Image (cartoon, rainbow, N blue to C red):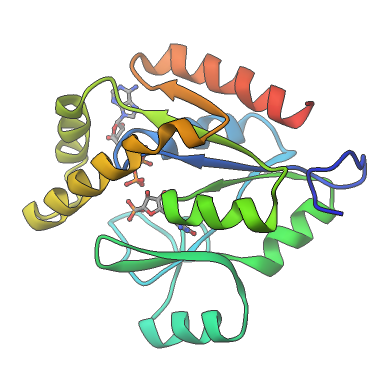
Length: 194
Ligand SMILES: Nc1ncnc2c1ncn2[C@@H]1O[C@H](COP(=O)(O)OP(=O)(O)OP(=O)(O)O)[C@@H](O)[C@H]1O
Ligand SMILES: Nc1nc2c(ncn2[C@@H]2O[C@H](COP(=O)(O)O)[C@@H](O)[C@H]2O)c(=O)[nH]1
């Protein structure tokens, strides 16, 4: 039985994907802070921490060697390369949380979302879209965390990801933040109580 079949003792897996800078983290931090039964999975990554990011809270920051070992030992539910770094979802903490009855959100890119469809075919998947590419670029630049080369890589990848939005169960345009929060809350409620 996968976690998303009707079993009241296990939580749901919910996947949220969308181009870098669209506002996934902003939306999810707000929603998860309001609900102790809604958790955000903590990914492993080979990228360096940004100012203010805490190991074990925002990501598990690992070396490339450690990441390769995690892949080889089957410790990752899914993983992908993104903008010259590796990202993956540690399997054990996710399984522990859903067996505790928590609903767990995976905030991951497109290739990872596709992999999760194999492992958790009943997991609902949500795609967050920007109002425009110009606004997406503005948000990435205003965040002020990426080099010009990294911004270019992220915007190029955004085109590919947006082209795949129709693969997802739900699509949401993150324009007005307050309205998007309400819409995402409503979508997640549908995912949790199908
Ligand atoms: N609705 C919105 N309107 C205006 N700015 C927004 C909105 N949502 C998020 N932002 C801003 O956009 C920037 C990027 O947001 P955020 O870091 O949450 O994106 P992300 O999708 O999680 O990116 P990544 O996938 O790279 O981690 C932040 O500076 C955030 O404050
Ligand atoms: N496939 C996965 N993608 C992930 C995971 N954790 C984060 N991500 C995605 O990576 C990009 C870049 O993130 P950033 O923090 O460097 O801006 C973004 O799209 C995330 O959603 C993961 O475990 N697996």
